[in-house]
Image (cartoon, chains in turn blue, red):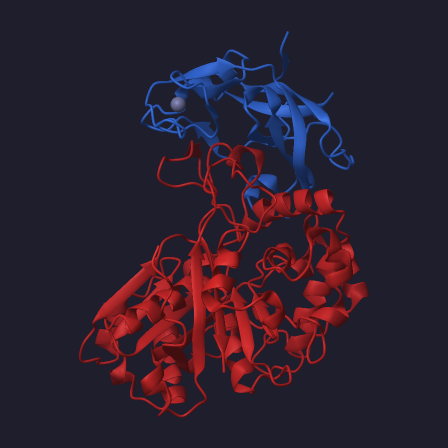
Length: 148
Length: 397
Ligand SMILES: [Zn+2]
């Protein structure tokens, strides 16, 4: 079962994510709402890519699909942020932003917050698991990460 | 590929800058800052401002060449060029483009300039409070739906993520970052132009300063300022008859490596300053080795930039950063590689790195306020660690 939460890591007021108008990344957001982590993959040569693109960067095919991955990742880098550069973050500092590498999707990386104590000293390369953070009022879901 | 054939065919003959201000304190609009820096560069070169017939800039500078030409009563504009991208990676590229254009006969006197009034036009370091954000647009990366909802919003954050990975992989200590910040502040103490002139930085003050985004303390981060700076290039022949010793353009390189500009932190080589292809190319064009460089000006929006640029420009092995990046090694007059001898973006003024070109010229003229004795070759490295293109430059006496 995918891990989910309705408790937001950061306070409301940050920009709400939307798909691009051309539909290039709609599949990613639809997957998150179903609590599935999907990565764009070329239907011709099976190359993964993230962030999504209009064509496959390997073979330039426009025939792209969405491949469900396990949600297991590797904590590639993370930072603790202390400066509130957005009014919504005034009371939220410090918080942790992580970059996670997905071994079962060709090593593409995704951004998220590292859930838990913002003062934790998480080891680099540690195993992490996706957590789906639902925002039902605004109709979107974020992928977040927690240490396994 | 044909051989690079414009080494020493052009030179920087004039440098100019406005008084440097804290953000929001410039008494005139940004456009007039640009005009003033350009006029002063012409005076420094000993030419009439009306001799300028070409413009080159970067980061989508708001002050258009034809508007400046109209305001300064220039008889003719033969050339105007802009380097793509909103970051500071294009400083040296703007100089390199000017040199190439002069060597090819497009124009005689090309001014390279950058003007910034962050008070008038808003700040770089703040995330705009917008309601919604779409996924990265296909033609443009950076702030996107993959980063903004997580509070990943500011350049300090992006650069910190890459720097942290690099420091982890190579066991780099905080001391290396502190040494870079302290070198810039140290050099600013002899430079009356510098915003931080008279404000020395001790290691204790560095350690006690608040975190911005780990590993960056407040003093690892550039200032936000108002100001403008400009340099004028011309052919080597014309340069010889002008007021100052010419600073010849040995080489200028620009570009990026393999798939650096992929959104959502997916640059293929992530813990990189993005100079792994551009730095070797620069040395090859110039026909020199890193050990020939006497002094270097590294763009520092954050201290992690010089750290990784020092490595990628061949001054030390990535696993030797702790030994190389010490206050003693990085300071004039006697350090192994004095860096940012005017104080740079951290302590002189954040003119988006343009002031670093002016300082490199001063070093090869022998007129810096933190002069490296008998400096012959000066390196300028523009905004690193960004997915967009980067550039660098070598000048010599
Ligand atoms: Zn393909």
